[in-house]
Image (cartoon, rainbow, N blue to C red; front, top):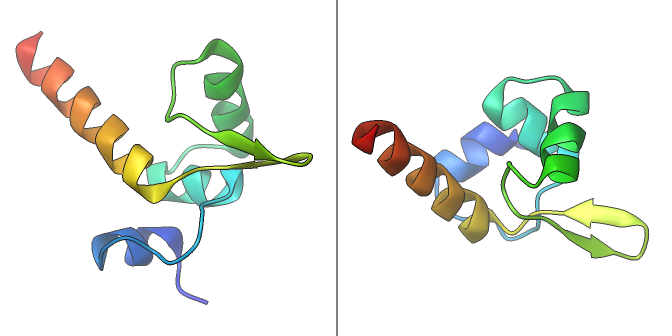
Length: 73
């Protein structure tokens, strides 16, 4: 299975991303991803039953928004 980073660089994956994928993608601990979700500061996720998933398109949009905010600051 390809890593989340490789998958996103190649285009949108054909699956939703897990919190572990997000942690790998951004090079942060998994606990950071959970804190982002709790504080609503990270990419938007959604629940599938008891599991959290992330839409790759939403993650890319969040990254673009963060990049724009960084440039404007």
